[in-house]
Structures are given as structure tokens and as C-alpha cells.
Image (tube, rainbow, N blue to C red; front, side, top):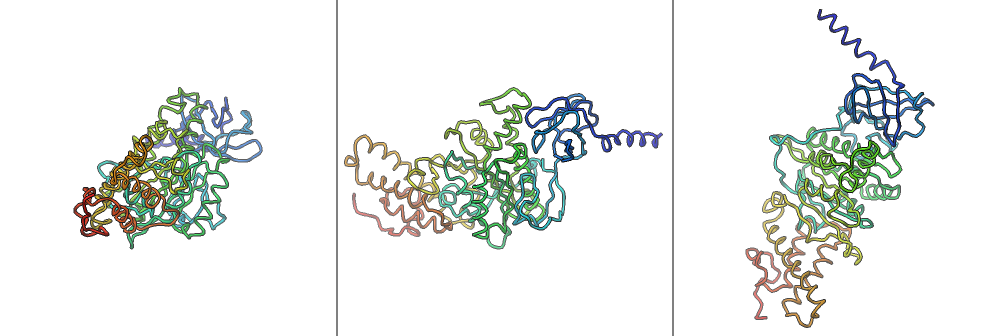
Length: 476
């Protein structure tokens, strides 16, 4: 009886391996609807044989009875509903991983496109992944030095954190991403890698990134996933998942500190909306699918640290806010999931300040876990608080000057006004040169020395040690 049951199971599985379906009933956008299928699973990979013999790849999106919905990565142009053959491969989407991926350029699905030697895989992993079990999750600690003062000094990026950058059309988000990839580092003696997932970028942008990485030698520690604007839209949905799978492998199997830069998440969400529209789903806000929050959470929550593991996965996703609207569904949902945000300013960009980071709306909720004595410097938190307070006061005084003029201000108010200008040009507008955290803090003290000492209430305990001129001034 047991043998007969086993034979029946084998016979049931054989058609899935040997039979090609020619039962396509409907084609729309990147989707195929196939009838009379049996034993098909959600997310199963599909091989599609075109009438001319060419092969394409797809994935099962949905199953309803004996109907399967397949999204085709290379698009459905040229599909003949009568002659095209469908074969279900009985496995989910996977990617080959190996330490040899460092320094390589891959397409959005993880296939090398740099003309280098074939990669001999150490393992083949499911790209879907899963959020880290909360019980196994270790809280983020220590910081990643990006070399950018407005991030390191004021909104520190902590290992295991997810800290998005909110950009806008025409703002230099790509230049900022390249600078972060070139300059980022961790404590000496630790292995550090960067996984860069570029989604929907132009050929010019891809050329810019490659020239930056090759010129500085940064490519040696980068795994570059490159999905171009003219690549299949559906491939864009796989790019961040492939990138994070490689990052998890390097972090939790090879004990590396891994920074994942994803740009541009807006292109990913647009691809998600395109597939949702093709499926004729009921749209949510601005036409995006109602499950976009869940989809983004499945990506962002793959960042973190695991108890007992030395490595970490830190995420720096970059997204463009349509019309600079921070309430748009993409930045809005991202803000709910992630632990802060870095916001780029169009007004600073117009003034030629790079990187144009608007300090006031920026936030790193986990900053305190990665700074302080033994990690950065003992005065780090106090300096950041004082800079924020003084800059906010200077910004408020700019509005007052527009009404009453600068002549109506007191001497102290004029100092705050000058401080706001100097803060934007010296701290924020550092250009393309990197800075250590010590340099950032020293420049901050130099800026604060332009304010009366009795105004520096938040750094009172460190004035005697770090202030360039700790002697109190006369009565103003």
C-alpha cells in the first residue's frame, strides 16, 4: 500500500516536469493568464518558450482554481496564445551567492553583466527572504561613518538601521548616493561591504556610478545591481530582493558589516503600480495598490542585526518625492516603517550647496545607540542638540528680518543669523570631500564659538575642553 501511494505521488508530479502548457487564455501588460494548470504554487518560477524558440522567465503571481497569473520579466511582446509554451519549474526565485560577488556588476535579477569570469556559487538562496524574528533581533549599535557632516554629526547612521533619503526631481540624490558609497567606513579591523541596488536608472546615471566607483577603487567592495530604465519593469520588482539576499548572506554568513543603498524606491513603487493595474486590482491612494505598505515593509524590515552574529545589514533607501510632496504615499509609508529620514532641500540646491540636506526635518531615531564616548566622541549628542537649537533660531530670525529688517535685531540675534548662514555653508555644504566625525565636531565647535558662551546651554559641560575660546565674554 505504501509503495502504491508513492508511485501515485510520482505519477502526479511527472506532468509538472514533462508537460508544457499551451493554454494561455489572455495577455495584458506583463501578465499571462494560463488555464487548466495543476499543482502550481504561488511565487513559482516559470520558463516560457516563445514560438521562435527563445526563452523568457516568469513568476506565478496568483492562482485561482485552475487559472494561474504569470508575470513575465522580459515582457509579453511577441507572445502567441496558441504557440507559446509554459513550463512550471517547481521552485521559487533564487540567486547564486558567493564572496566573489564583491566587485561585480549584475543585472536586476543577479546575472553578471560586466563580462567577468562566471561566478561559482557557494549557495543558491531564495530571494523572498523574511523579516528578522523579533526574538532574534539585536538592537542596532555602533555607527557607520558616511563622511557627510550633516548625517554623521546630526543624524547618525547606526548599524542595523534603515534610514531613507527623501529627494526630489532634479536634486542630486545619485551624487549623494555615490558619495556615501565612496566614503562610508566602519571601525578598522572589520570587513565592510556595500550592496547597491539601482532601479530604473538611465544609461547616463549607470555610467556615472561606474566611473565614480572605478576612479576611487570603491567597486572592489561593492556588489552593484543595475536595473536600467529600458530594462523590463517587472525585473525592477526583483532588484531590491536580490540585493538584500546578497546582503544577508555577506552579513550573517560571512560576518561582514553591510550597507545596502537602494535607489530609487519610487521607481520600484511605480513598477508595483503598473503590475497592479495590469491585474485590474482596486487601486488605493494615488493609484498605488493597497498592499504597498506591506510590500515596502517586507523590504525595509530585512535590515538589522541578529543575536550571536557579528555582521549587520543597514539600509539607506533613496526615493524621489513627486512634486516634493512629503505626504505622497511613497515617502509617507516609508516614514512609518523606517527609523527617521534625511530630507534634501531644493532651496539649498539652488544656492549651490552640496549635499543640500535640510537639517531641520531630518531625524535619526536610533542615533543615540551609535554615538557617545567609545563610539564617536563624548560631546557628540550635546553638540548635535546645540547645533539644531541655534540653527532653528537662526532660521526663525530670517523670517523676522524679512519683516522688520536686520537693523532691528540685537547683536545676539545677528550672531544667530550669521550662524545659520555659516552652518549651511560649512557644515551642510562640505562639497564632495569626506570628513571624519572628529573633523565634523571640531568644525561645529568653531561655528559655535561665534555665539555668546552663555547661549551655549546644551554643551555647557564640554566648553572648557572643546571650545576654542572658553573664557566668557563681556556683557553684550
